[in-house]
Image 1: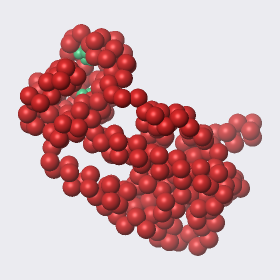
Image 2 (image 1 turned 120 degrees about the vertical axis):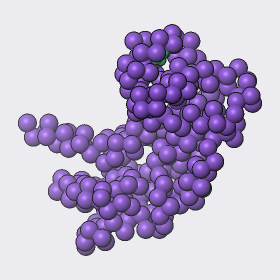
Image 3 (image 1 turned 45 degrees about the vertical axis):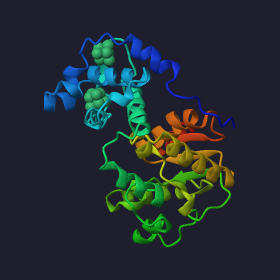
Length: 268
Ligand code: SF4
Ligand code: SF4
C-alpha cells in the first residue's frame, strides 16, 4: 500500500473555497447559527478564517476566534443546502487542522485528546478491557473474539465496546455472524479507536497513526473483509482511511447491514 498522504490543503479544498459565493444560504439552516444568531459561527465567517490560514495570516488570529471552528457540530446541513455543492464539512475539518497546528484549539480539548491517545478510545477506558462486553453480555463461547486468521473482521468500535447502551448491538452482530457460519474474528484489545474523534480535534497526524495501526492489525489476521456496526467507524474506513494513508485499503469495508443484504440477495 502506498503510504504517503498528500499535504493540506488539497486541490478540492482550494476549489471549494474559491467556489463559495458567500450567499449565506447555508447559514439559514445551520443549527449553531440559528441557535446563537452569532455571525461569527456562520459558515461564510469560517471560510474567511480558513483563507486567513491559507494566506499565512493564521498568526494574527486569536484563540477566541479560532474557537469558532469547534462550535460547528459537523452535521453537514450546510453541505446539503449549498447550491454549488461545496463540500463544506471537508472545509470545517481543514479549519480544525489549521487551528490545531497553530496551537489555537480550545484548551479544554487537550485533556480529552490526551486520554484518547493514551487509552486508544475516547472514553478513557482501560484498553485491555475492549472485549469485556462479551462477558457482560454472558457470551460464554465467544468463538471469534480472540484474534485469529479469518475472512471477516468485526470492528467493534469504542461506543459498542465500552458503553452498555450500545453493547447489545455487538451481541446481535456476533449472533448473526455465527448464524451465517461466517469465518470471523475481532482485533481484540489490539483494536484502536477508528480515529474519527482525532480528525474532529484537528489532529490529522494522530488519526493517520490510528488508521495505520488498525489496517496493520487487520492484515495480521489475513481478513479480506472488515465489517462495522457503527456509522462513524464505517465513515472512517470507507471515506477517510485511504486519504489519510495515501492509498487503497487491502480489504473490503462493509457495514453489517451490507453483509446481511448479500445473504438476502443470495437467498432470492
Ligand atoms: S458554502 Fe455554498 S451556500 Fe454557503 S455561502 Fe458558500 S456558496 Fe453559499
Ligand atoms: S456542519 Fe457546521 S456549519 Fe454546517 S450546518 Fe452543521 S453546524 Fe452549521
